[in-house]
Length: 220
Image (cartoon, rainbow, N blue to C red; front, top):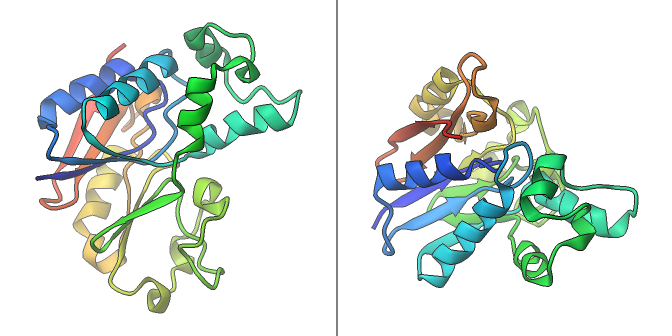
């Protein structure tokens, strides 16, 4: 059984399918998906439908909420807040996320803020070390930036944080992986939807056990 983490798919459906084929995902593996399934790319609905299908087939998916999923629910609260970009709305065949079918609303509502697996803490954006309990659910888990220099090793213990949210160049991710034991954090968002930008444009997968990294080039 392997444990894999992927973050910030952002509607890159074909890239995700190719990446999962490359790593050879099977039903005995655990797949941690760290949020931001929608927006930016062309195929948000296809991504969500594909993940729903994998769940129905018995794959062990741990699905986390990202800030873009949080904005889905902002669209229900604030009438003038669109929540999804034009590509996402077109993908779902709607004009506003308030028109999302209940099946999808229920799916988004079940996304978790974080997950722990052994000594790994998996989260979309990061952890707020000003909190007394750094694992208590809060919005900063979806939005926080620039938190590396605020890590409290007493609170973190031996745990290591795997996150997305901020697009990092491929070489930066590889360097962070090599220093994971020392620094205790790793960002795995390589900006899949930013194809053509230097160092970006891949969907990244991290094997929690072997610590191998895969980078799947964007496929439209």
